[in-house]
Length: 452
Image (cartoon, one colour):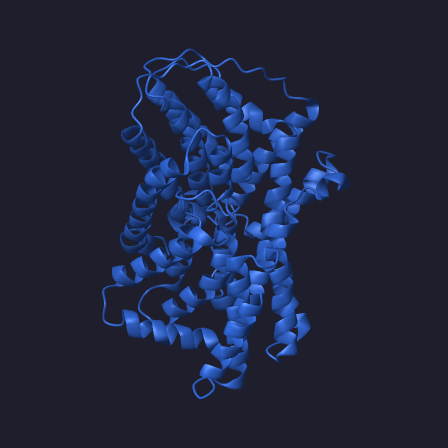
């Protein structure tokens, strides 16, 4: 922590003739936040608390203004998503979905892997990728015990495919991965643009589908197997309880509310109804009330919500506010323009995507997004590239690492099974990182302009 503080002070001193006093103060906050988040010299949540305190002490914003982002609508959106995920797990609805998609299959081993992947990706759209990975690996490891593969690669493929598809699945919805919701939150706060739940799916779902298929093909190519057909997987599942049925109803109702907030113009004209008009965050609040009112969850379950992540997001949004209010974000984006000026738009998009992916390999994806999103949005606002596209690129690329166990919680869970080595993960993950970044860059350059 001392080293980070020294670097922050030196950065302020080195820019004394270049930046204004408030910009230099914001630079100190940025360097300290980035340094602590990257090195984890103190807990990530503690850094989130340091950010508003430093802003107040250094005269960037009042304490009230610096704390406001901790209560941003995006925090409510994720809290509602977390509570819905808790209800799904508490009442075994996740097991119900997995059972319906897997238990009765008797098929080619390669196709069975794909079924596991699709199921995991679907679960990760609505519950945490950590929970979906843990659940599906429990079933998958039971399957590997009955399968004989002379090359010993089947267990590697099934473990990695589940972890990787959990990461890919979370990219397709605003509640699937925190960085997606953060991108939506920063866009709303900085330029007033609101990405609807269905609107985000237009960006993220194609990447999820393409990545699931890519992961399947790449893993089978790198780790060939000798297994042909496997028998159906015997899974013991208790029938849904009454609360489980209530949870299923609320779950379906939640999805319908989220995707009908604001319908795309062609669909709205065809139906004669533009959508109910409630934001995704308001819908999340309604969901939370329904879950408590129907006694699906209670106050004791609140402690299981991912509060550390919510506080981390609040810190990221507060940091973004400091960069914006001080004007430092414009200075940074102007400097980046010197690097990207005159280059094709796809080159700038590629640089943003690669930088987002690169920093998230070593740092928390949520923290990485908190640092990079305000810079990307400002860069888009001062160039011909839409800030919406650059924000979505950061939201996705910072959650697109497959290479190291520390990259994402699913990666860590996969590595902890002992079925894969670090070398296995790097070999497969590096290829998938490159392909994932390429897919994101191409879609951002040639498809996403038509979605905004």
